[in-house]
Image (cartoon, rainbow, N blue to C red):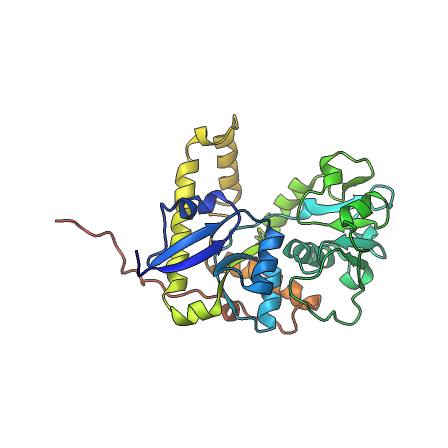
Length: 331
């Protein structure tokens, strides 16, 4: 419609946003142009550096740094990407690293110090396994999405220009690598590289049972001027993301959709593991608050943010209808 607000949404190509992309679900009053043909790193950079999009799936860690520095962004509690991270600590098999504390004094490569996956891994290594972030040498491959001033005691250097940290790991130039993705040497079966936690899936299950955290990777950010000019926008976007996720769940209940022999068996096991709750839930309920508060603590602890931010100060969670909404009756 001509009077609809026309916005661009940049996001990963997830099942949960299929209905938004195909247009079978749309935010009330909004015409969305949905962009999905970008890798996460490029999308985050373009939003943070250039404000290229109106609404954007964005790195939680970089969003915290941006808010700490008063960037004109707001976020709604729609978390399109989560991932357990214990399986993303990679080591050079000749570096003598058999347990987390063996990382102390070693050189650890990262794409950026600020990456959300690295934020979670660094925090877990320090507070779960006793590996202080100041007791290793960090080697960063890329420029940070949001520049920050390293705090005293942080040992952070840039990798040589054009060098990938995963290649440096295989060649012994660094001892370990924390990464957001499964790195090429692992995919290629390079014997010089292995995982710190080979039984990572079991460790991740134990971690969730003990902490209740399924780590949030990304938030959904909106350019602040849009929120200021259209106070209704945040709630309507949240409603649309919820409706799109619900549509994806309905679609995936059909076992013919997924080419796995025991798909429904696995699905039922996972639902039981998460206690019948939606592990991808949006909003600022108790579980998500604990998740976000932990990430904020890790960010402040390592010096990415200068002040300990409060969840309610950095997320928009507009009031709902207070129980008024119900299906309309057609007489």
